[in-house]
Image 1 (cartoon, rainbow, N blue to C red):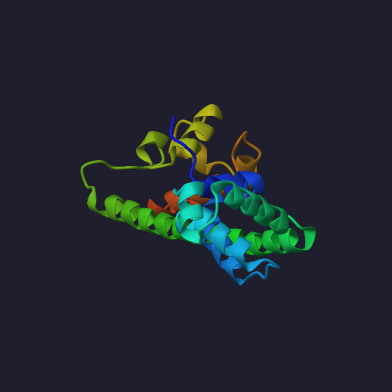
Image 2 (tube, rainbow, N blue to C red):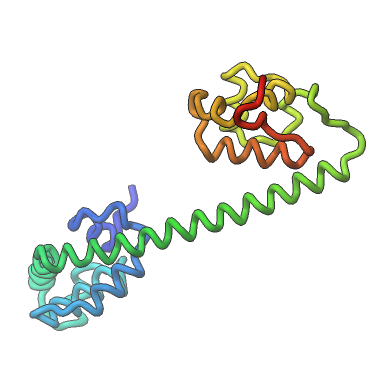
Length: 202
């Protein structure tokens, strides 16, 4: 079993598992953060971030002290970081960065979805060998695995059955959320169809 690197030890010590992917942001924050003992901060930065796979002995050699002394100072750094005022500020900072990363991921996913939809539209236009109409099976449409399973579980087998449903009816299906509904509407749009409008008759 491979040994955990020092950054993972830091994450464990401060219970920052949610922010494990924010290593760069944690480092930037701690570099700017004031500590009463600068040598403690310097050693900790070396041990946890700059050379995350080095040993206490390696750090000790760099600073000309014993490995046990480095261990003591590392623990002191953790204690200083865990002080409520500093720790709360760190969490507040990371929450902002974490949300930014999540937003970036969602934006990338949206852009990917847009590309996928363009490809679907292209295929719908260029694929002349296979006609898709309202009597076709929903298998002919390129739904995600999750959405496909939702529709199959609800007994929806044909496109005709699907377009006779209203958006609200889809949302009432088990495991069918707004993302799935949005996907269904987008896919139907590529073949010139849409869900039954609200207030329409089934």
